[in-house]
Image 1 (spheres, rainbow, N blue to C red):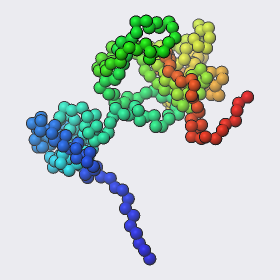
Image 2 (cartoon, rainbow, N blue to C red; image 1 turned 90 degrees about the vertical axis):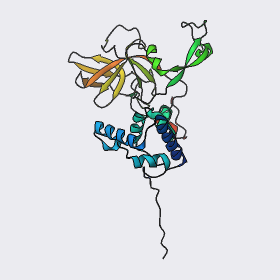
Image 3 (cartoon, one colour; image 1 turned 60 degrees about the vertical axis):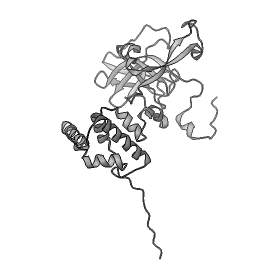
Amino acid sequence: MIFCQIVLPYYNADEPYSAMSIDAGNKLRHLREVLGLTLREVETGSSEIAARHGNQEFFIPFSRLSEIETKGTLPSIYRIYTLAAIYQCDYRTICDWYGVKLDSITEDSNVTEIPRTHRFGSVPRPDSLMLPVAVDPGFDVRRTMNLARMIQQWGTVPLQFMPRFTRGSHTYAFLGTEDFTMYPLLMPGTFLQVDENRTEIVSEGWRSEYERPIYFVETRQEFLCSWCNITDSHQLVIQPHPLSPVAPRVFRYPQEAEVIGQVVGVAMRLNDWKPAGSRRSDAPRARLN
C-alpha cells in the first residue's frame, strides 16, 4: 500500500510572502527613519489608535513592525491604516507597495456583470485624471460632430478641483444588464445621470415618449428606472415601456418606494449590445420574424 501526502496551499498574513513584501517593508522602514520615528514610538502611536477605535487589530507591537520591515511579513488592513496614519502617508500608497493598486478597482469592476439596476458606490479615486483642457474654437454644440476631433489638448486635472465641474445635485447609476424595464428606449447596461432635485412625478406635458420624464426609484429590495405615475390612492406605478417584457409594478408611496430623482442624461451603446446569456454561448440563435 502506498501512502501519499497532499499539501494544500496555506496562507498566513503574519508569514513572509514575497520579494514584493520585502521591498514594501524596506520602503516602510525608510519612511519611518526619514520621519525620525523609532519602533517603540510607532508602537505607542498604534496603541493610541487602537484605543480610539476600540479595536486591538490596529495595534502594532514593535517586534511585529520589525518583522514587517525586515522579513516581509504582510500587515493586515488595520495595521496598514495605522501605519498610514502615523506616517501621514496615503493609505493607497502603502497598498500599492504591496501590489494592491486601489486605482484599478474601477477597471477591474467589469469582470462581473451586475444584473440589477444600482447606484454607483464609492470607489477609491486616483489623485488626478485626464480631461480636455483645450477645445477647438469652432466647436458648436448645435451640430453633431466627432468630439475627439474637437479636443486640441488633454491635461491632468487634480481631483480636488473636480467639484468646480459639478452641476447641481446629481447622482449616477447603471442600468442592470438584465433590466429591460425601459427597453428599447433605454438598453440594459446604460449609464444614467440622475438629478436628485427633480423628485416630483410629472404626469402630463410631454409630446412624445422621448420627452416623458424617466425616474430613478429606490424600493426596499432594488433600484428601478422607469416612467412613473401617482394614483389617487397614493400608489406609485412603475410603468415600463410598451415594448418591454416587464410588467408594471405598484408600490405604496412613499412607504415602499422613494423617488431618487429624474434621469437627465444617459450614455448608451447602440451597436453591440447583447443579452448577458448570449456572451457565454456561441450557439446560433433563432432569427426573429
